[in-house]
Image (cartoon, rainbow, N blue to C red; front, side):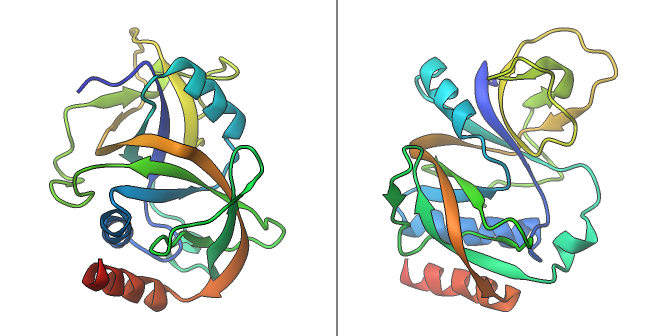
Length: 213
């Protein structure tokens, strides 16, 4: 399936003390329990860009690519991990998270907010996923601009709503697309009310969810 013209692009890796395989296993448990829907936590507020994407794309998608750089120490061994327990939609109205959804992150003092993309995928997040043998789909940084501003995409942007314009871009970084999902209502949520958790508790949640789901 070709890369769409406009989409949400997010890069992922070790985060909040969990490896890629652990995160995908937990998100797969959530997806299975929620009838295909899972919530992908992100650190930046892309709400206005999501609204623009909804105006331009009939079936908006989220494309996922592995981060190329080595994980930072505070991602591998964070001082504090939290679960986000309250949410609001793009309209600012309260949004109730499903019972089996668990969105975590490392906690940064002074940043009492986190965000999440609302995604749907009808097949497993885990089956067929292999970082050593990615799909043939590639994303070149030089082909992307931020959808809302038209500015080139910065290499440090982990999540962005982008427009792709295929063109010759010599020596530009390329990323494989290892996973893709539909963006579904309410599309994007702002999270609040963080509660401290431990990484072992987060991992055990996935086991319980798989057993009950």
